[in-house]
Amino acid sequence: MRRARAARPLIALAAGATLLAALPGAGLAAVIGSCTIMVQSSGTMKVAPLLTSMSSRNSGGSAAQVSVNPQSLICNILALLDCYSISTPAPASFLTWPSGWSGSASFASAFTINGGVERPGNTPVMVANGTKTLNIHLDATGSGIFRAGAYQAQVTVRCE
Image (cartoon, rainbow, N blue to C red; front, side):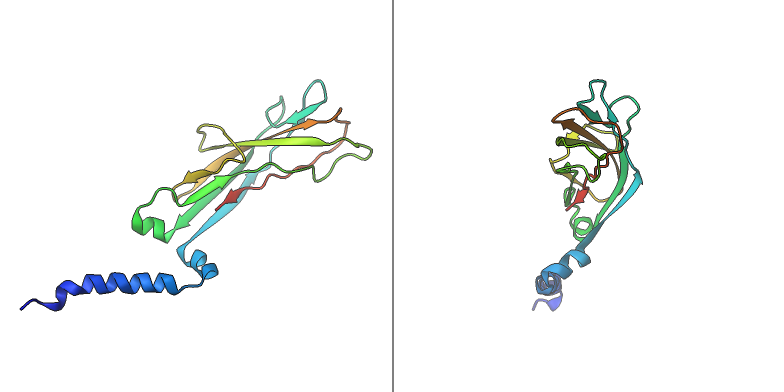
């Protein structure tokens, strides 16, 4: 006669699967994982000599720096390396601009993770659990000349 002990792991696995399946969709994300995003420093865009573009890459400009910490219990349990994706889509417009500026601009963003390869901001990159440092650049090309004054733009950092 066989012992019942062999069936226990199967029952435990089934009970675990039932528990996960029973959780509502919104609660599932909270139980399984989270992603913390902290702005370390804002970037600065500087205008190019011809006054038709601005960039954090221009002389005097700087990239924004953000720390992102994705954590997922399921990824830890299953030893998965790509549970979250990170992207930094560019804004559609400036948040603020100088009075009298009637131009428009197109934007492009790019980012690096931990000083690695630069990637387009709108391209999600799969990442493993753990804290990463993002350096985010933003470029704006105007439909005309950027007039003197303060401009402000905001890049969204996504961790999904």
